[in-house]
View 1 (cartoon, one colour):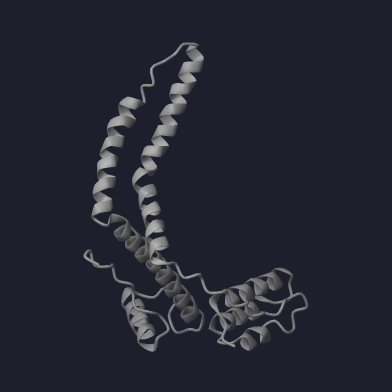
View 2 (spheres, one colour):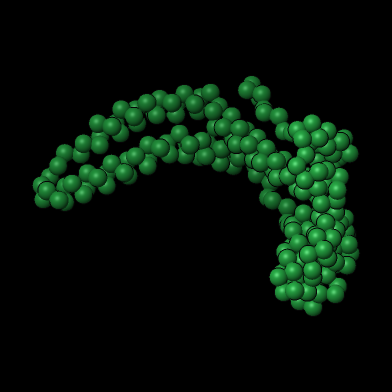
Length: 207
């Protein structure tokens, strides 16, 4: 069975522990770590641990159940909630902050103090109400959800790209500090082989 990046990382951690315990010298440790990051299967990884007494074998993780499919109404409701939190989040934090200041001042003075935060929160809230109404009419929640999903895919792509770099460096396919041209050529080759998906593109505004 094919090994994943998380499995390679776990083996590297066990090898690090063996080095600290004196079971491996630096040369053996370096060779085995390189072997771990270049391993393709669980058998390749387990061979690196067979002579270490406290090393646990690498067991494939149980497959995760598929995420429940979200219906159109639920997806729209979730996107709207996330967008509303994005629009009103700063206002809500400011309301809590100013109200706390007003409350402390009222308690300290032992007198009834006019709720002065209304002069800040009121006009700001009116502006946000207008923005909310206009945004809902123009489909802003859907656009915001698409942008957030795009950013999530970019983070995943960056993580996968970094893992490929580490494996290539460990296997000697790339130098420890590759140049920009070397990185670009390596990524282009990885995409052509199917080892890395193309970089996600930003969704079109009109979509």
